[in-house]
Image (cartoon, rainbow over all chains, first blue to last red; front, side, top):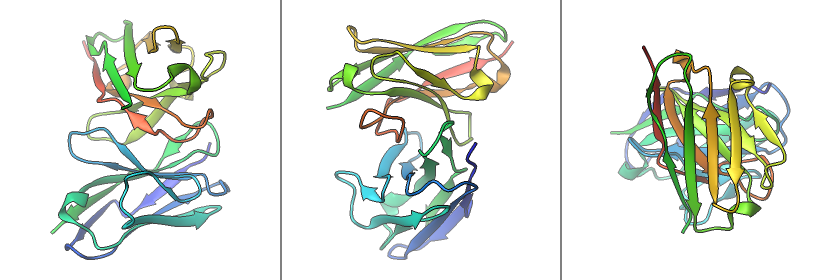
Length: 107
Length: 120
């Protein structure tokens, strides 16, 4: 089973700052990493899919990079509306596994 | 517009059964793999099970193998999750999700979730 280690657990950022979230896997998963945003009381929303592909309608402030075992998710110029919990998820093998989440607070 | 609407959640005693349903609309249901993802209260996301578009193959996490059964009715555009021998650790919001590109990969669309509480 591929374990996904996500960090940090929480972040507190000011509007306009840059956010970086890391996910590391214990097996090589090529570029099979996906990123989600979950706002309070809502279902998760897919932001970025395998190969660092931004989903339709997602602002270009969101991006990701990485290959193999190390991945980074970035939000440039963070907005108040970006508050929520962000999850990474590997889709290289079953069981599909998620990181533990990063709670983003905007000061 | 893709819509996924779950139903069937509720309070159930340990050891009992519950069946969840997910009504899909806005896309050709029979073309897509589907999955259930759950989230225990205040916890993270956990993939539970997936099913191929035809329903001929299914995949489960170890902790639910032999207890949960995923199925689908393509004529009714409905996904199901039969949950037997429920345990307290199965308490969670269960999300119906649609995968993409005819394979196990990411969860492109999510329902609003249905809460399952296993407690005596």
